[in-house]
Image (cartoon, rainbow, N blue to C red; front, side, top):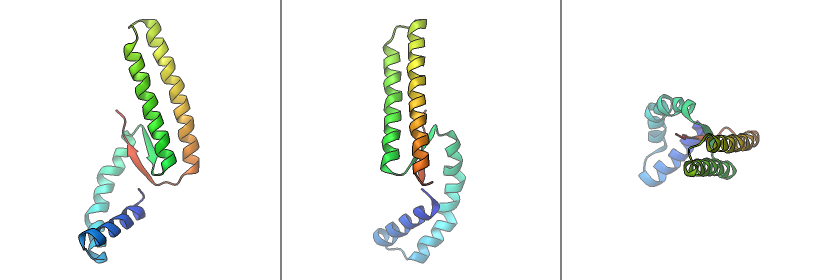
Length: 121
């Protein structure tokens, strides 16, 4: 999530649930939370296969993309290990990747820069 959203969520939670003052929350955020986010979370984005926007539509696309990928992997594992089977699986993967990239590009045009990383290995 964007830094102002992270801070506002933390302020709401820490004040309501943990009994902290706004000054304490802001101080902790600037002293530890933001620097750790910049040191660890931001650099990890370059390893993500794609970044999911934090809205329902983007989450739906991410789940569909992951589901398609897993189905393709599962269907290819069941195939005989022949050149023809591998070619079929490669074709399935490429077709789904094109569809997934198109959906992601469409989504990127419709959403803000508020995001979380989804790492697919």
